[in-house]
Image 1 (cartoon, rainbow, N blue to C red):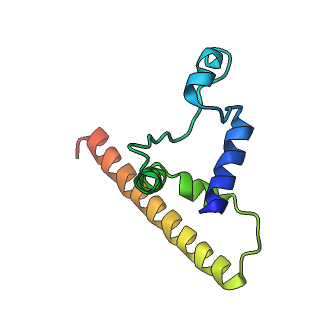
Image 2: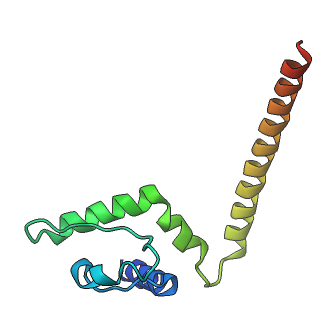
Length: 112
């Protein structure tokens, strides 16, 4: 979890967002561009529930995938092969769908 927090804080620093609380930052909002991130409120000091909510929001928004995509450590050759195969299958599915949609559109345009 610490690595995720470190990565998120570096993303915020790169985007120009301050990591100060919202109230202290309120007067600066007009000067800064809107901060792209996830905000989670902690109710009754329940940090565990807030972390669980943050994890769900990160998963649904795609931030986790973005962080994993930007990892800069060594990837094993077997993992590279698996990723390459998945990317190939995804691209082929996409091309096949585009080909089918093109055929359907041509039929509609020609009135067949």
